[in-house]
Image (cartoon, rainbow over all chains, first blue to last red):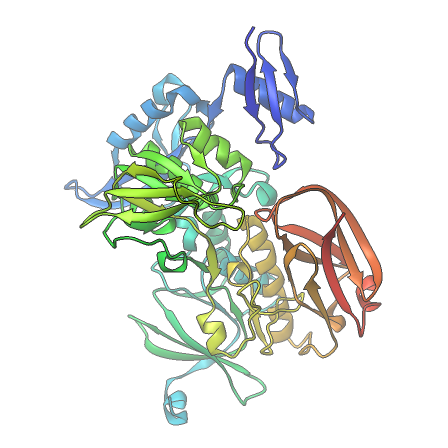
Length: 119
Length: 435
């Protein structure tokens, strides 16, 4: 079974871990949270994606950029596909913080939400 | 400006606290001042919107300490803007402060002059002023990268504004100089937007960014990090065509023969932040050459009475959570002064940096305004393992804290008790990093 090297990001210490995902063993972690993070990184790494969406007016003219995020982390491997979907999107005001601008992106069960108000 | 003009423009309102800057520090200072009883609080902000730099920091990682949640920049700012709008705090937008001055009137010892499209020139009188002017990026000139002067060279923060606020892409093939957090964040951001980031180049043998950003902004996208390297030539006629990078020796001098060439169209500079203190300087506030910010007491009062400073204008912070916390100290202290609950510092003890420490803030302790505990913030001069932070008062060691790992990128904090500080009267407090 191959070992995966993972740099821990739970705290600034940045422990270098070696994770055997099949056996569920983590070598090099200094705390339980680090061990859990190491296992997650080796089995199903996820990331919160943050980006922007174009706000347009009724005639389609650019108005502003709405900052957005995935409401929860999504699989790391889906980041670029998610970017494609979000980049193609055009939205109009008003927008409230927390509004879902994309529902269930790429069938991850996670919405893409606005992070700022645009009244 | 003549006295006659000043009178003609004078506002009828006598403010308790005027906050210069509506970014994270200014927002927190204004809210804290209001909540502590200052009811006439005015925020003067240069941009069209409150929130400062957080508005363009669309990434997450803000607020873990303060809210125990991971927020994006706009979300973090939004929480403070919501809080501000629940209170009767006045805000002037698009208002550029020209200067802060002292007045003869003991009831209104400070004046703030600003211009804005709606108000024209305006002078307001206030009992106190909080300077929350933030910081700016070190520009290309400050690092002396030689070569041509084509377009395509941006500071990382300017690039962030173009991409995140204006929706403009800045280049296709990018080299980034500087591995501080802004450089790392922009490496990821530009990659997500379809650019190819060829390299992040760092002068020092270590990155100044958080480990988490090294992993999630560089390693996730296989972006190489060149430590102990720097940009030695910018090549391009109209637009950047090539960036030459060289390895540096222990003295950070480029080593001939180690050049690596990157064909690219864009160079981003993420080479540090400098507190912005033009207004403070104009007001006669004494600056610390180490922090580049004002010298302050633990209540963040500058050397000009009733003028306070906080946030990145005071010293550059790693986390906005710490900026908010510090700004609240300044806001509360300004409110206390405006309400006549405190007086101008008289009995001061000095705090300074010793071996392996680059600076200590606050630099002065007002012995008549001590809380139970006073926190000092400092930065070490290099990456070290297994050392201890030592606080000395004269020859006497008054505190020791073991540190497994310290780095310049991570601000350290040492707290001292009221009794320890009172005992320091007449002596100097020195914080150093020892074996």
